[in-house]
Image (cartoon, one colour):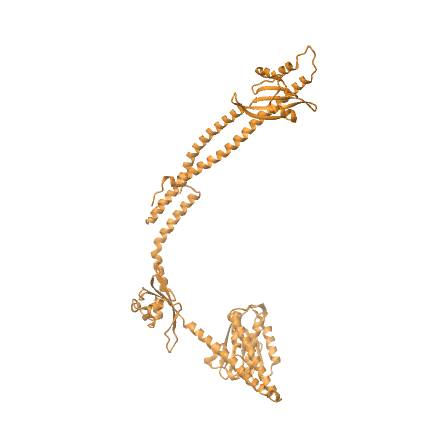
Length: 609
């Protein structure tokens, strides 16, 4: 691993960033502090000068207003005495000027020659003219020091009688500022030195764990997972070190379990339901699981190293054609005794360069699916047949009517009646098919409610008994116990209507239909028996198939679609129940359905005979 140069190391970068941040902070604080301090010192100095000038102005104004006698001192002499009492180290010179810009007095002895002369100072002229105070800071060319000059008017009421001019030494204020700047500079240097030491220490605490992790990563690249990174704290870097150690453990476990995973893969292939065959790049079988051997009914020794086209019986295909196959291929191994169809799907295994490395063939038993497809085709054929028969009849009668039979009063009503009956039969067929379609796709909901089934079942039987047109007797054998069940009354009514209708259709004149209701093993059972022609024993289980009829000619004559019992079975199953048939040819058929029920508080009683 390449070594990082000193100036590019994160250690140096952290120290430099730390120092720059502290330096910037000190500069910002220092500039703000010095500026505010300078402004404060200047303001305080100016304020003190203004206060003293106000005192001097009061004394000077009184002297200028006072009337003098011959024995009194002159105005100039009195003003010189007043000004001498206000001299100090801060004030360099005080001058009194009258309203005509004539200098009346000065506090500096060497400047006495100026008394009586006109003042040429601009601040004095502006002060007298505008009746306001003015100030200015300038550099004295002789003393090489900064001087604060200030002039303010001397007023008597609203009349300006003169001006007071003061020059003060403000240089000491700047000296104080320079001394404070030196103190700040020394403090900043000391702070940076301390910061440098602390920054090096802090950077070391950060970079040391990183260096350890770098060395650990290099060791892991060489396959050494025993080394661990030292954890120096509980901060983010410490958590990173813990995570790095956890990563090391995970990689070590992954490496140790790789071989185990390979064995697991072999075990999965051996226990897969689907058959799996792998080939090399030449199409020879290199791997096959037990399921594939069982499906092909071959031994491993017979299959390995053989071309896959030969093993699967696909001699009409080449290996290249199989590698480009996008759809599955059926393999028909059916015999006369039973069907046996496999379906195989091919996928290509490739290297990283895209070069074909072999084929993977996945086989599954498709016999049941083919059986379902066959039943579906038979279903479509039955539907087509059931629709074609009434349509053919209707077309024949309509053609006859179109050819003039509608004018025959004896024939036309009969033809129209047949056409109407066939139309209604097709409508019933379509409605039944829609019901079955919804049930197959579960596009329906059961609106269940708790129903006392004795009364519910009895009401349905009463309706049929009241409206029956043939000579058939009804017999009821109900349990006296109140049987409560949760059912969708509309759908259960359809179930019972279909069963009772079939019983009436196949019952002979003078026959009997028996209804029974009882409980057994926490289940409620309902049976409906007729005395019709019955069903051959080998066909009993088929009566719930779609379009199955025991007597096709008679069923069509009665308008049946062959879907009633199929619908009844779907609805009973949807309620969590079961339905079955018992029949003996020539003696009748019994339909028995079972439903879960809720126990009531009424004790069990005997059946009504």
